[in-house]
Image (tube, rainbow, N blue to C red; front, top):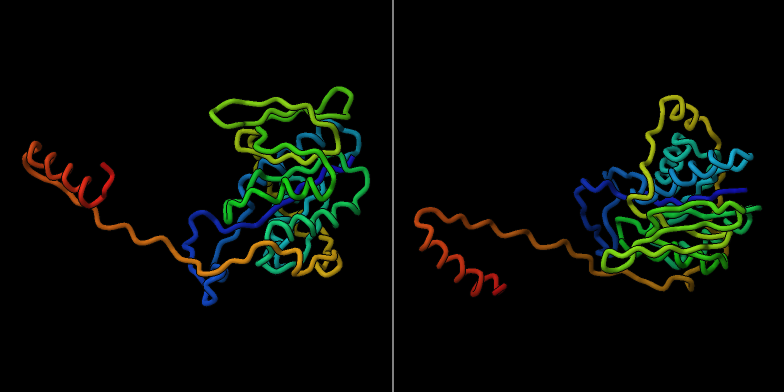
Length: 261
């Protein structure tokens, strides 16, 4: 069985974001790029499943993005233990629909696909759409925000536990093939070993041009414009002296300036 994982490379959470001159995207130069944190859980779950099966199953990782940088997220997954990697060389400005369609066309070329793991969402745009759209394009069953995943004894279904609104949990039996969106808590991602890192550097990565997947501008459903950074936080007010007098002043500011009471 082939176990597939879809990855996205995102800016590190500590990166200082700048908007580029078009006001429709961020300035990508000078950014530290990392694997989307939710995708780390997806990779780990795929590796655990492969190791549990011990039947020659393989973990194949896919990513879509600019070749110059996106290849690094595949190297990270290979260093963690993935068997093979595929890069779809594409511009940064694709929307979730275009991304899911391109991935689906590429993934349909793989044989004996049992499951596709993804992160539940990417931390850069927070759209949380690609996993669901990918399942629709593939015609696979789908579950997201998954915090537990077990392969059934018949090896034809998964029993997954997922978070729902209000702190409740939902348990679903989902037949293969399936797309499963990983949530934090599903597992603890492993660190890449030094031998794994060295091996990953030499591993051949298959490349697919976006143009070969039939994705065009008509597939794009979202256009971005007029990006703005959030306003600077105002300087904090510090009260000193009499507590009773300060309390009166604080209430007045909360009512008249902050308008929260």
